[in-house]
Amino acid sequence: MQARIRVVVAKPGLDGHDRGAKVVARALRDAGMEVVYTGLHQTPEQIVETAIQEDADAIGLSVLSGAHMTLFRRVIELLAERDAGDIVVFGGGIIPADDIAELEGLGVAKIFTPGATTASIIEWVRANVSTSVA
Image 1 (cartoon, one colour):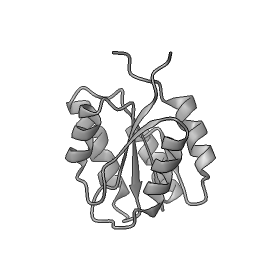
Image 2 (spheres, rainbow, N blue to C red):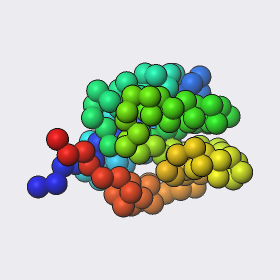
Image 3 (cartoon, rainbow, N blue to C red):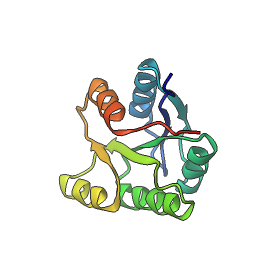
Image 4 (spheres, rainbow, N blue to C red):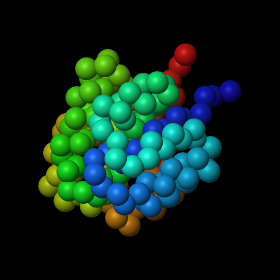
């Protein structure tokens, strides 16, 4: 039996708009994944700590505040510092196309923009995130 994919869904920073994150978290859960939703106003340090403690295979960040470059970069840096660079980072939000290319260059695996379907997110996670082997 293959282990279920474990995903931490997080809302970093001061952005208080969490409906999208909750919709994605529920969709991933309903698709058979284990999901930990961290709630609002999480720091990158809290998110990475949760991902490591929960033995997550991926972190999904929802950023609508405009601080996506800083927040994604910091999560990637912290994962590297904690020797957890194998945790896949993806996310979504209102992110300009030019910034998406830069985020991917930093190591963010995928950015979903408004209009992405939950089905497309589930399909991408299944195809691009492998489970941890204990």
